[in-house]
Length: 400
Image (cartoon, rainbow, N blue to C red; front, side, top):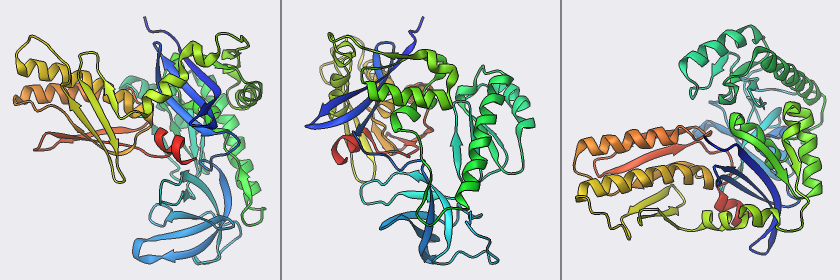
């Protein structure tokens, strides 16, 4: 029987800087890690009154200023219904227009943050959106559960927003979903009304702190405890849960023992350091080499110290399957995203290649972030894509 997961939040010195580190542990191992500079807020999820700075028709995009000198990328193709803060007769966007926009992706390296007029308000079970005004159900749910949730959620639809039913809604009853819908609906309408009466560059809605907001994306059926040893962080977590997830307040605990520390008890610092290393050893003696580049992440699988007695092709399949499970874990642990290319050990038999791809696909299904196994190329390289919204763990540690 699997142990209940534990979500930990603490302050640590990481490479000489104080960071707020959050970690989700499943079955005694870190499954997710996040590392944010203490005292700095993420823009992700915030809603602003932005001003159109310029239009780039050649790439069908605009740049929108959300604060003095803070320019964000805005796709015209993906935002066919701008949320103007004042009535406008013409539909075409022009410089100087003021819009209600939400930061949908953080700045990454040389790329500006991305903003959208398709506002999303996420809860534990549901997401309300002002963009697509239909009903969507998580594809990660079993077909029977999708049908059950569709029957519950369809009557919830209204003209002014759409609803996405999240994976965490599995097993949730109608009353639980209705209560969250009521909270989110009030938030949507309050934000839209407030935004239309604010001046340019106003922050209309502030997303909860990153470490608190992560709670709603954790697998709720496996989340047993939320623990921190910092009084200020405890108060912020208490405030977040009281407003957004009151049913989970009983999971929040304050760790007040001097020894061992929360970090020592769970080895949070060690897990963080391990997730920043290039080489990851496998139990068999094989290892992975994980190398993020500007365009993609490359993962190389090596036999290393493996000394199995089986014939070579069986050995390769065994190591590759072990590597597949670890790759799926590392993508989530390090928050790797975009294009990932995995170079597994070459296997001649097509049935072995298919067995590997099937196994990898099943492991990737555990990831709460949308992850797609694309294909194996003629050269034996496996392509994976993973949705990007936040910086990778490496970027969080070294760029903040």
